[in-house]
Image (tube, rainbow, N blue to C red):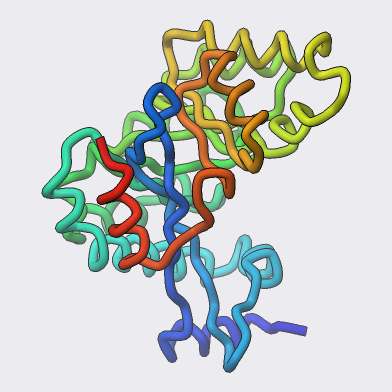
Length: 249
């Protein structure tokens, strides 16, 4: 079993690295950005994030690793962000860090600060206490953009989220998986996905797109962006930059 002490030692020993999951604009299948994903090279094995990220939630390590990710993104992609307009990089921020100054301080002190508007801080929907809490976050986001992650479909849920002044809403993979079911064409979820496409106040990103049918249905629903293995797996920085060069606007 992995311990917090082992995770802290891994951070001290530079065992973590980043991969970047490309974000695709569905109107022309161009790459317009990526989401930074942390990986752990432990001896000869890459430890899946689900084996260690849940362990650090609520601990000091949660902040330490998040700040490390921001600094690492700045080290690897600051030059790329400087060179290209209309691109973005998404960085996940644990719920317990919102409302604290460390995230924004780290951003300001990093090479990303001059491109803060190209940074998207991603917050899981489960980490939002209420609408007022989100508004407080937005007032202190220091020029960066914000995305609500892992959104599930549902009339009440969509109505509530649609009223929030965030830039992006990410549709959870579990929703996109439903597209492969036989009754998708007549399903309530199909209608709800199209309702997202009608929302002109936010940009939507579909997560976990793995097949041509999913990509086609998401685009047909009016969703602007997508991520998933149908387009590309997550890539180390050099491979991501090569991919972007092939698929850039």
